[in-house]
Image (cartoon, rainbow, N blue to C red; front, top):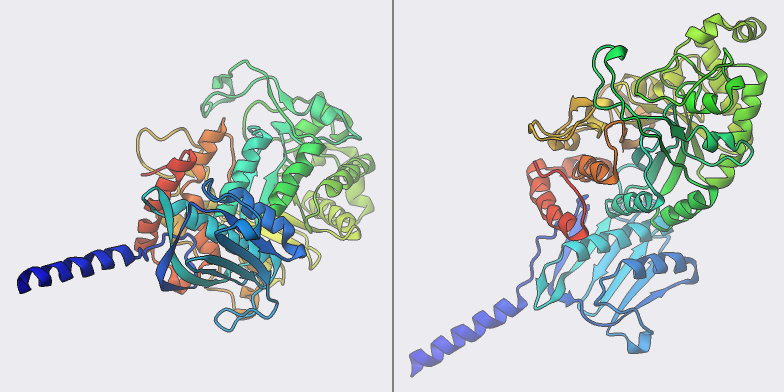
Length: 532
């Protein structure tokens, strides 16, 4: 009898322990600075109320839209669970007063998200969203462990880029792209809107930019071969653009998710679509056509006065659509052949006392920069804009390796690191023979993860100019949104940890375990991804 009672007691203790067992292996990416677990858990499957101050109403609305279906948002008196959003301007994490600091606390009957700023509150919401998406289901309900997360990002600028000039993606996908960014706490969306192969933004003063410049007559098939004469085309007209109303809607959608949209209007190169629309903007007067293949083209904006009038008018409308402090003006890959042959450009060189066409490009960039500065905005440009000198508030995006970023930081300019060998997600991510066609190069997941944005050659003061890193997505070989998803996932997750997590806490083996759990999340959400 004693043995039977003893066995029953053991079974009862075992069952009790099983009921209280809490899975503490959360698979958050990026990895937070500090997680403390409790001894219980919270289950979905009940009504929830969201409590927030008036200043956080938009954040509360965003939160309600990402909660699981089984959590019906209701009035506080009818709710079985409360989620409270609050700002505490004195909040510190690890003794640091970082702007995006947040504290997420999950108890068995309440969730509290406290941010030092609104941005911190949004970061906490996005962390909760990821916890909900990756949480296990027990008896049909998602189960979250009792925990406290205290966190803030390593870098202030955490960016993703998307080229819509080579291939156009509808507003619905742009929002999906922003959703993925928010999930990984990226806060800057660099939207590449104009190209040789297509002008994608409505400018009301210049309707031909979309009537003509948004459409190319056909598109190159494959890589094209070594000689232009070997190129083959699909023979199909291709086009698309965003109306100003669509753009404003997307900008507002991004703001709800803590993301600033930075538009890029390319100049003086990568401008064939604009020249095809308004041939008088070029040096030769045309005729021009919207490019049908990829590469760098000799026809670029002329430096005559009417061109600057056009660009200032375009940028004025751009600023009305985008409240971002930054406007990206490109500045890369601008051949000087036409300028050397152009009387107007040679006259400009002489009148301004410039040495050559390279200094003429510097004049071009500085003139646009001064215009934007007068309107309270600042420029970002690719690292070629360093040539000839910049104003102190110009930011350099280093893409041709890290040298441009190092030089810019040493000159006192802020820098966004986006070197091709570690941040270009148009490169192959696997050596699998079945990989879809890409531009070339090889950038596996581990190489992205191990990237360190701050070069060792910078001293402590210079290193402060490194704002963060950005992943670039050039779409010559990404004809649809599914292909874009495949190329960014899971490499975007790796870059998120580069941008957010303290480098001393990074561990690729640990990240690999967590990202495999995210593959399950991608499948649930219907995202296309690479699992090699």
